[in-house]
Length: 158
Image: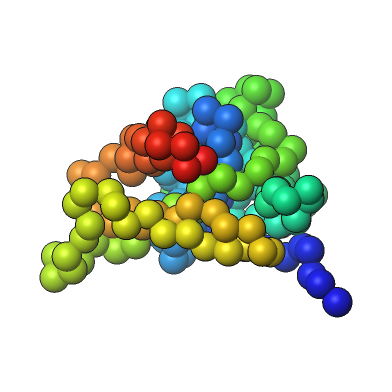
């Protein structure tokens, strides 16, 4: 029997029409990054737990009913995104076009600097572009994610 549904720990946003799944270990700043992207016009689909489903060769993500439209930001608490950012800041579901893994910056690592290391990850038989962004103080992760979306879109990878 084929499984066509499961869940992923992360935040799913729609940025300029593309579904971006942000993953990373607890406390790395996924929800804070999502809040900044919401301020810039992105739309929240799900925070913390993303339910994933395959429909017509697309991977779609959506929130469980009990946390729909909610985002938790450490130090601020749980926010109803629809009430704070407006109705246009939420979506019931979105395709997942890009996976962004936030990782801790380690100065010993040699990170790809030219952007040729976009990998793919398979979810329910569908390949999705996957990039890693090292997180460190002073880096504007939300802007980097927006640029990654624009770059991959311009290259026809989204």
